Length: 81
Image (cartoon, rainbow, N blue to C red):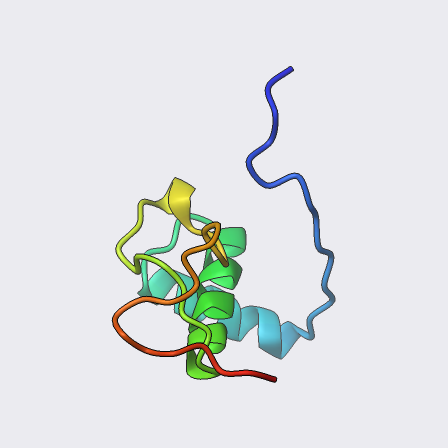
């Protein structure tokens, strides 16, 4: 069996309003799935905290929160907690 690229699973619980907001955003951005939308929102949230994440123009199969050691991009420094 092939090794999974994303072997970890995360279960979250949302209110109906949160789920509707997620789905509305997902469809507006033409995201292929809820999972890819959540990963993209995580990337954006991390970037807002100063943690850089790679390529925002990735293909849907490439949507991920981090990409190996490439946590700094475009000259912005990573902030310490």
